Length: 398
Image (cartoon, rainbow, N blue to C red; front, side, top):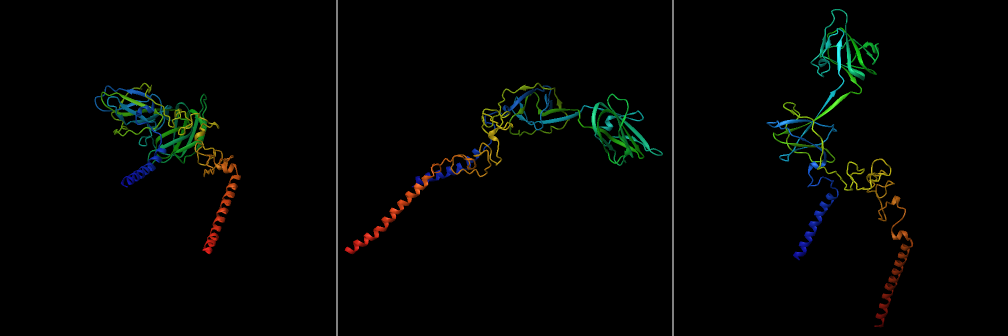
């Protein structure tokens, strides 16, 4: 009896454990193998060897090619095998420069009028009588396309009374009017879009004028984006920097210190980019087609079938838009959210043109069955009805 109870209890425990484990296994997301090194997820690598370091120092590495926002990097210290935190710094440089002079011919420092600071300004005194006038000449190093003049004033300074804007097209000698003389009501002046490298802006003022910023906003800015990777390096160590991951990797949990601080940063030259020989292409669904070119990453489809040529594999489409993907839908062409399949043949009722059950293919079978059952019941009823009479006859004879 004890052995029977033990066997029953063991079976119940196994059943409960399976009820928790099986669903989690069925819904588990594909991930990197336990034995797979993190660097195997990256396609490219370069080596940094800052030999001149004598103390731990933040190293800044200019990237040999631009990367997208959110790109993951993996920095590994060769001597210890440790993975380090890193920081991607991005800079944007305006390649088109502006030189500004005003009507006296004295140049105004570009640092004053385009330094994004409100505490620096070009100052013009109020006239003793009447109104004052100042004309700025703005010359771009190359033609720019613009439709917006931005004016920033020092604190507590009144707007000029009026503004006038003229420009000269490339190759022309005459000035054309963009904005005729008019009252200035805002620090932002809009005008029809033009492409030019020479502009003249005239302000009429009666109050002291202190201009902090004067800028023509380009419609298509000519800029250069530079990217740098920073990490904390140790003296005498060599570092491998991996990037270009084709799948998710766990975040490195080491403390990095303040990598955003620009003080004391050691800058190295542009590294040589190499192919990572330990790279193993990701194949989430195991269909033999790597994720980067797989038209259905999470569904097994080695044939890559795409009948409607929309770039999405048929296996992970939802043609009838009923919430069931093609790989799971028992009727891919007609909506059937309930997935009803009365004959259990794997084909939904709404598109099942051939019934699979024997009784539906042979409708006479149920009638024969019901007739046979009725006949059997009739016989049984007759036999039961005869037994009491026979029993009564025997009792009378006695």
